[in-house]
Image (cartoon, rainbow, N blue to C red):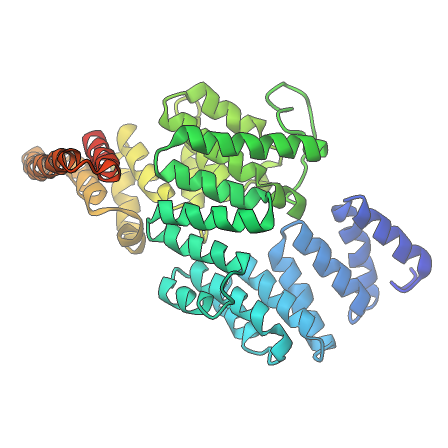
Length: 406
């Protein structure tokens, strides 16, 4: 077998990469790498292919090796840190960023460090790093928007994303962020408008991603988890569409949104898609649904709703012992992912199985608190109407509706 610098092999590998045949390229490059484990060219191309297929752990391994083979090349350190960040190894990624002393890289490093802190949910540190970025930079606007979103300030976040879109032009990720803000504000029509644009552009610009073919019953092969797929924001858009349809009780449309997304193998599915598949098919395939949700809570990270939904569904299907076990085994998740209201509700439901009187008392206390909350919110709606405060009315009515749902 010739080495990687052999002209024909190099040309063949570049052709594979150009045509999107990353798995095939990875197979050839791995053989080349085994023949010469310090080949900079093989490692660099392997790292690129792994990153492009979103196999960030293997990408990180390649770039780590490159930092040893070529310690003077700061690009490899940066790619190593980016791969670790994408694989959710936040502490390791931060450690690598601190090893890059080249001042030319400082702007990129600060942005990456802000993203790392955001991933760790250290919002104060993330904000401090974002504040070091140049104002007026569209990336800074996006980062500020993400921080506002985390704080629940959805309208302000939406304005930041729109400002960035005016500078950058149309970017699917930004359009998705705007749709997500509208979703949180319960302005579903506006959210669906942005989702429709993401999907239409994805179909038009990337017919190879086979959107909608599964729903139509056409056999298609997996499109894989490429960076191209990620950049279209199609998976995120279809998941958000499914969530909106589910909220509106359009259950068939919610399921269709999940089957319309570009086809991937079960092992390639992202956590949000797995969660939504489990939730929306629970009536027909409960065993599979519970398996998916149990699998997800062992992963890091997983969609925040997963833990509460698993417990609620166990109770709905009368698996109270399993719900109690999950609560006992995952105390660290309880404080992070359950609101005090949801915890009290689940606690009362589970208690009901062994001590109905004690459960009745817990439900009675919850009801009393609930009635008091509804009184306060009703008063806020009336006051906002008297003051002709349209925004205040909208906010109070939303909170009132949420309380009534509970």
